[in-house]
Image (cartoon, rainbow, N blue to C red; front, side, top):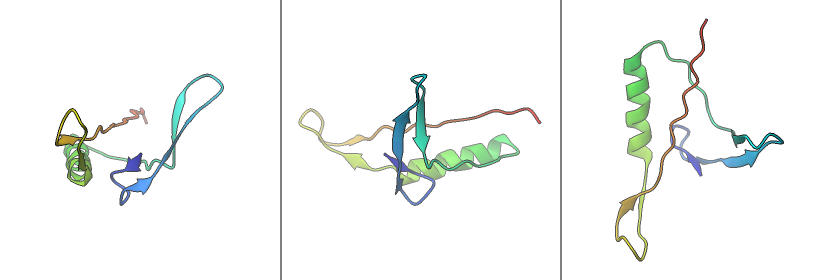
Length: 72
């Protein structure tokens, strides 16, 4: 697992005592409008890689976008 907005730095996935999954080391960015969110999505998509399996010669690897909406 890699942080696509953090120079593809390796990340670790952990599960806490309540069986909630947490991504250790994931960066957070504060954004003020939807356009900035779109730009981050585009940057992440550009950093994705392709791979191959016996079933499919070329495919995109999975990506996860995590949003935390907070009222200030």
